[in-house]
Length: 116
Image (tube, rainbow, N blue to C red):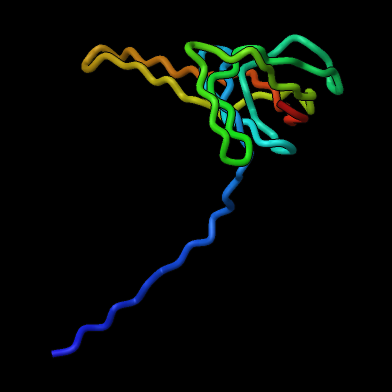
């Protein structure tokens, strides 16, 4: 009995230069030219922002890991401010005719990574 084997090849882009930075209690991957949506920042559209808490930096195979941070930074530009997707909070108590429906949209800022 013969069995067929099929191979699936997925072509995902491999980035040789990237960095991991931290802002707002979360970690994000920085690739030059990539846009990232992060927690809301103060500033207007077009302003430049610098993130100093750089955790990992990979440049052409040369990986540097901070303990806890590196002495480098990520430079980005604010593209726009917007709100995230709507989250619905629905609370109820059975047999009491008590129902509460609330919504929430988290404010966020979209930045474009310039360099690191």
